Every structure is written in C-alpha cells, then in structure tokens.
Length: 354
Image 1 (tube, helix red, strand yellow):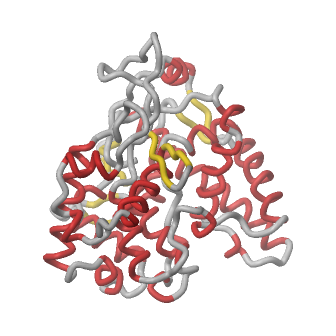
Image 2 (tube, helix red, strand yellow):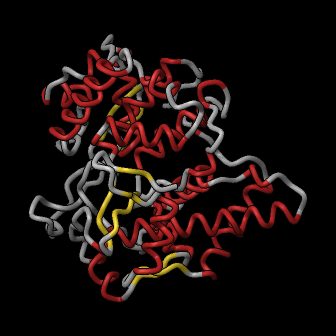
C-alpha cells in the first residue's frame, strides 16, 4: 500500500519500492539461484524448529507490558549507525581502524545494537527513568554520552542526532499521545499500515524515504522494526496484534545486504563492488545506496514466497515464516558467520535511518 507525505504527495510502500527499484536498478540485481540458496538454508533451520525470536535476546524485555513498549520505542528511536572504521573525511584510515564503541554491562562487553540495549538497561538499573518521554525528551549531549559511555575511546556515533530524535519523540508523545506510545498504537485499530502512516506523519526521524527515478520510495527500516519488535515481544497478542503484519518487509540496513550477497541473492556490478571494497562512505540517498536497500527488500520478499510455497506443498501453515523472521535469521546468520562473511563488502552510510 502506498502512503502519503504530509504534503499529500504519494510515496511507494517498502514492498512497492523494492519491486520498483529492482526494475530500474543499474548496479544491483536479484538472482533466482541465490534466492533458492538462501531459502534452502532457512528452510533447513525451520525444519529443525521455530526460528529465533525477539525474546531470546538476553538484553530484550522478557515481560510483555507497557514498560516493554516504552523500552522498544526508545531503543528503535536510537537504533542507527553504530559502525566504525572510516575517518571523518570519508576515506579508510590506512594506519589503523578506530576501536569499536563498546558498552560494559553485567560483566560483559557489547558492541553495535546490543551496546545500545545494554546502555539503556544499565541506565535503568542506575535509577534513570530513561524510557520516560519526559526524561529522554530533555536529555543533553552530555547525558547521552554518559548513558552510553564507552569502554573505548570511541563514543556512540551521531550524538547530536540522537539528542534531536529524543527531543522530537518526547515532545510528540507528550503533546499528542498523553506521554505514551501505547496510545499511538491503540489509535491505529490493529493495523500496521495505519500505524506506519501515523508514525511517518508525527515523527520525522522515522521518515526513511528517498527520490529514485523521480519517484519517492520508502525503506522505513527503523519504522518497520519498531512495529515488528512490538509484535514479537507480545507474540502477536494483545497490543501486539496487527491484522496486517504480513505487509511488513525486511529491515534494510547494511548487514543484511552483505548476507544476501554471500548467498548470491544479490549481485553487484564490478563498479559497485570496487567502490565498496575501498571502504568509502556512501551518502544517504545515493542511487547505489537506494538500490542496495531496495533490492534487499525485494530479495527477502522472493525468499519468503519461495519458503511459503514449500510450506504449503508440505501441508504446513505458511504463517511459520514472514519477512520479520527472515530478517532476524539473516541478521543472526551474519553474526554467527562473521569471519566467513568478511570477504563480502558492505556499504557504509552515516545517517539516522539505519
């Protein structure tokens, strides 16, 4: 389903965007052989039992209540740009890569997204009501650096942008939803599409869109993962019930494309591969960046269709798989096989959308 911007202009949905981008792409394509290869691996795991879910992460909320929704909304409002390895000029540091941003929590060290979760949990245990919009809406740069203080010399990236995101989120929730994202969810009558429209309208930091071939396409990585996290936390029940959950696509970042490249589901032109191997910054909205993310959406949609066809043929419910579960599987697969996947380059874009 297409959505509309505040000015009334039409925006292709992520699913429509993926299809459109692949048709017009110059440097990225989707391979049928790679779709089958990825489907085979996922199907094999599915035959052994349910795929991993949100609650299995030790840092995620285990109790499905309104506090969990407050936690998820805060985390996904900050869920972007954790990578290191490129200097400010956009060129690879030839002498040495900077250390990763790293958070210590309960005797363990975490990087990336998990460091974000650990920082939030640590702040809560230290007595800061950080999931309260009245609190996070007033946080300063210094506060963020303290909450997400690093064990290394590398601070959490894009600190000012994180402060801006939180100020906007806190203000909107207090002004329009009586200080609770739960009320925003309830206003959308169990519809993913209505909730997506509402969030895009009210929270500019979730407006992950680009112009491509004179059309506005949407990727909505953080927006969709926000809804998916709530659905997963609640097992699709209660406030996590969405009658159209299957309209959500995968969450196009920089790591899932790397896994899809590994399986051969995505193919890059020699020119794009050469660029990525130089480890240079790719600007948000660059045609190549949009192609990588859009093709990732389309590839996962095709993987989903292939697995569902096999499930149906074997008499099993097709609901056993969706784009959310495939995304989670691919993300975990990359972490579990990090060393083997290092030979596949991934794009690096410094922005608030992923």
